[in-house]
Length: 540
Ligand SMILES: [Ca+2]
Image (tube, rainbow, N blue to C red; front, side, top):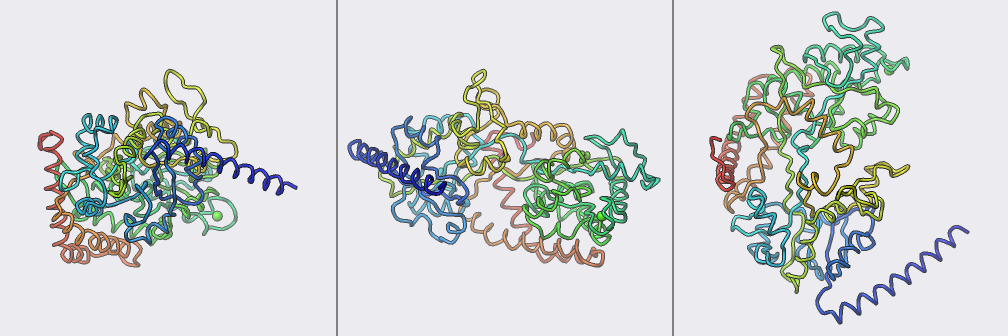
């Protein structure tokens, strides 16, 4: 019976769609050229853009009709020449690299968007107000070939927070099992716990030896875990505690100098110590081969003694969340703490490209220009007001996120309802137009209180750099093999049976010397130009 009702309503809906489509199609033909087809990359679990209220609102607002067609990311990545797809005017979520953007751009296959700024008041304003963004978007010939995604919360540079199972530490204290040299009392067990690295290690050793969860087995506790090399929740800040500004690319800016962390002997010392932690079972070997979803699934039942992640709520089932506390970046023997800065960008370059075959470039770009307005950016990023992503009414001129999605988690809701892509959400927007989600605020506050103050002195992210054609090609030859070589040496060293030798580390550096120096030279040249372009003195 239910099936029949659904069938009937689907038929009615379909009929309605046909009628609506005809109305729009007729309107389109009489109105002229305001109809476009845009290919977007999305998974089947994400709702149809054509039915999303935010796109209906955009159509009403602009008088421009966009028909969205889809590729899943698997389909899309199999297509070696997506710009050659017939019948589309643009690609949303194009994900093009610098080299690809420039390559398509100089061959005239995608549009130089900077030539259409008259149709794009919002984007023009952004480029003027933010020379760093303008600089980041340029290709070697000075043209801008893509529309960006800008989401600034100051979060992505610090993707690792160390969480510790407080319940288990309490149990150690209660049972008299806390190592005598670790002076910890129960009332200290709160967010911001202050530990030397050696104290943390001594606690992990107890987690390893004892049946912490009380199920009768001593082999199913995971003392420490993370997702090695992942963009969040990786081991970089454990390595940083040895006094080296590590991130997952092993490459950072120290006092305006592009630097590889792997060249620092402190990095080698960290790797050697990690090997010892792994061989003693303090770090689970799965930390080096699990993906995000496996890591999240394994954490739910509360058998992690400690882990690195951005927030604990996604890692733990609801009833386990209060069991964990935030540990400050681990102190070295001298009492110093360090965290590195990631190179994850809050300005993402290749979000949307317009194909040269598009017959009304001004029209389509004036449509996408609307995406940069706060109300549209917010709905594109979190879901439509009508779908329940925000409360129906603004407060003090601000959109207020709706955190209550019933049985559905905030992540699930957002994944299905938000198209993401071209947005502009900056501090000014958070201050005036859109209230930040409560979980984002929590991250901001946690990072401000427990992580950011310990940023390695003089260290900053490598920004989006603007390369010449020759530089792009040279980087293309060196970067990929270099990062593979580093990753394979590192993983073998850490999970190997014996402590890595200094000689094997130096051999790895020697073998890759040419690539290391070439990448540094090119990055530095581009970084110096970047500093000049955004008007900063190199010493300042
Ligand atoms: Ca157990």
